[in-house]
Image (cartoon, rainbow, N blue to C red; front, side, top):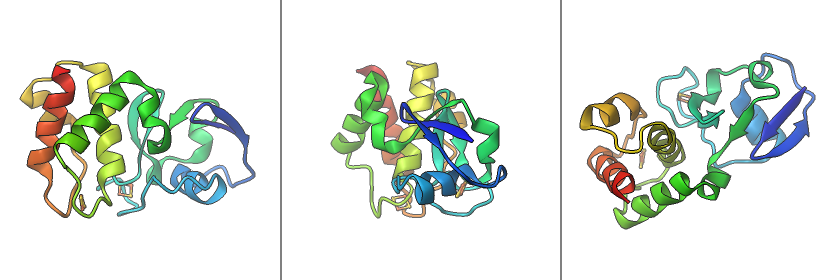
Length: 148
Ligand code: FES
Ligand code: FES
């Protein structure tokens, strides 16, 4: 099947129901996307599919063939993604860092769709878990990125 990841088309030979996460990590070697729970609960595996935050651990590769898939490795290539990363650095959001690829992509999807989100918008969109409890800093960084 053909998968377009970060603007590059790849022909991958995997079972159609292989989770997108494993194709990204194992076949394409893009290890910025993390495995957390494997059951769509934590968001560590978040990627963008046509700009929408998507949990790749439960997304069959075949279901996104031909779609535009973006991972953390190229998030700064968009204006919104760059602003989000800058806000993350300025606010020193990460602790262990494990959840943060997914958090940054969830924030990028939110601000692309809703450049000036309300607190409720942020609450609704930022559902990724963080075992280090960086939630306050995540919210502060999203607000900073939205004001830029
Ligand atoms: S690893 Fe996909 S949601 Fe947790
Ligand atoms: S920074 Fe450690 S899990 Fe979020």
